[in-house]
Length: 269
Image (cartoon, helix red, strand yellow):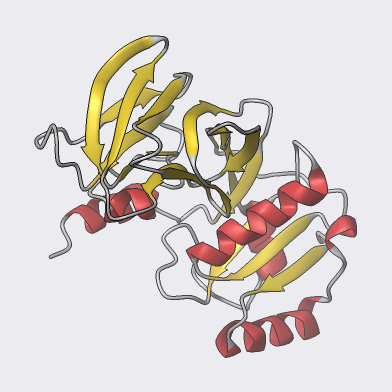
């Protein structure tokens, strides 16, 4: 959900916690910005400024979630990485004012419940996606159920994933899934190297959908489930829902044009 209103902070100017990726470019940027604007621990900050690429932004959101419970600190990202699809342009001037003027987008991640073969159920949060992947040379066989109705009795594939709008430009895009605008209220269900049915390209689902994957022939065709950085091996069933009780906030400059980035990405050669 996009809110055009600028966020409000406890302090003026806002107290900033700078975090950076483990690259020379990002570390140098953090040093300059800390010298210019100061730095506070994340627990005392109004906002977290993340310096890196999209992968580091994902790490920062998980870090904020771990510290802030279901309503963590807002994150303002600046691109010091390679792609930066969800990051603002890097500029050092007037950073406090940019943060104060920024529009905020509320993200709800996915909640994965992965049940292991003859084992426990593991829960994890996926901000980008939840994916199922074959563990051996044998293709995976999956049955896909949406809202208690079997939609695909058997998918033979390397795997499948469910992506959020924020994650639709990551693994989902590499698997030829659709790019989804932030705030669209849609999830992408995308196969990974589908063999049968060969022409099935996936589906767009309402954000409130309850998606279940049952792994067929678990002994012969073992499958792992991954929610961002959490992997559960040898699963027999995976349930995916939107975690409406968890809210993450990304901050964007008013001139940030996500729709233009979507169009540009779809017409790139």
